[in-house]
Image (tube, rainbow, N blue to C red; front, side, top):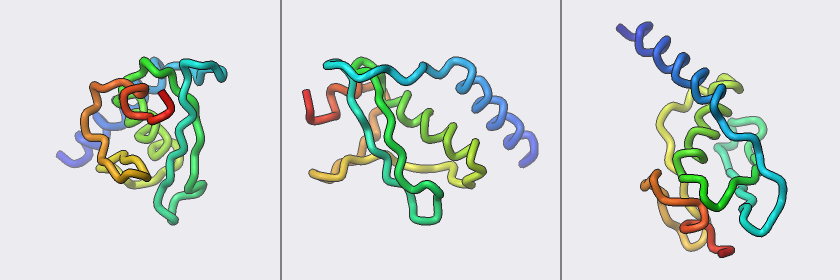
Length: 102
C-alpha cells in the first residue's frame, strides 16, 4: 500500500513537471518570490518569478517539485509571508492578491 502511494506521488510530480509554466521575465505584472526553506535543505533559499495571475497552487507545486528533485523528504508544508506573518492556505488566490507589491 505504501509503495503504491509513493508511486502515485512520483507520477503526480512528473505530470506537474511536464505542464509547469516557464519562469517569466521581469515585468510589472511579475512578482519575485523568495522561498526560505529549512536549514537542512540545500539550498535553503530559492528565488523565482511568478506571474501575478498565477494561483498560489503554482507556488505550492513549484516547491513540491523542488523537494522531489532534490530528494528532500518533506511532503506536508505550508507557505507563509514573513511580515506580517500570514499562512497562505488558500491555493486558489492569485499571487498578486497575496504579494504586497501590487
